[in-house]
Length: 346
Image (cartoon, rainbow, N blue to C red; front, top):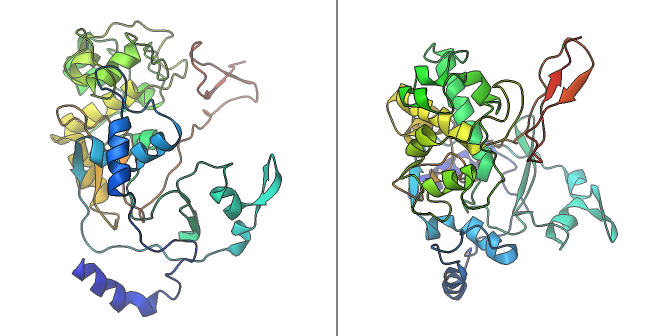
């Protein structure tokens, strides 16, 4: 902390707008009494999943995951690269439609109409809006599936180095998948969430493919039939395919775990260490981060806990390139996740 203080003092003249009046002064993220209460309110792990609670309980759990479960570290390195401020007050006043009529954006974030923990908006590399309505800026809330961007980013790094060819089947890099449902599926199709494997995210009924995958990660209630690890799960599961690889979109964390397994195998290190080595060490992050690791130290690549002040990303899906303007969406019939657009070749 002393070194950080000196760094801020020395650089203060170089950054004329470092303070943000929308950021509240430091205060504890929780109290002793609230911590004890929230731990008591957690479901019995033998009966229910920790993320089932909603409302205030969900908010507290998502902000304090490192109190509840084991995590594995992602380490920062080198000089911090602070993001400059160029606060735009017009964003504070931007009208947001609510059941009570239009409300300024900043007021909306603080109102009962929003459940946002915090919002940061960047424009041309500078922070133009920053506000933490239901958390402190120093906290490390869970990112959930935005974390998937690390797996695809690392595959891109390895592809650029010539160590991964995304047109090749996944078993070229992970031979254990050669007799699995993923056999013959290209890395590209897994990146596109188009593996065709019938293991849809969102189907959380016990005994289903995705629920058992979550349980193998330590993120759902285990049964006597739950595979020991997600590696065992992916090599042994036989859910079948709902469509041919590359022909339909089906959002699933199993695809992302296959990508992380490829990264681990090619770089010969655990996935969280790969994130440290290839990403977190190089971006000038303010602090270390962590992955949730509910079972056997395995990072599920969907649960990341960063500190504020690094880069931010959004989870989105781009349309495929088309040869005509006629397109149609092809999605798994049992899910409601957004689809990519596939060209009608006519």
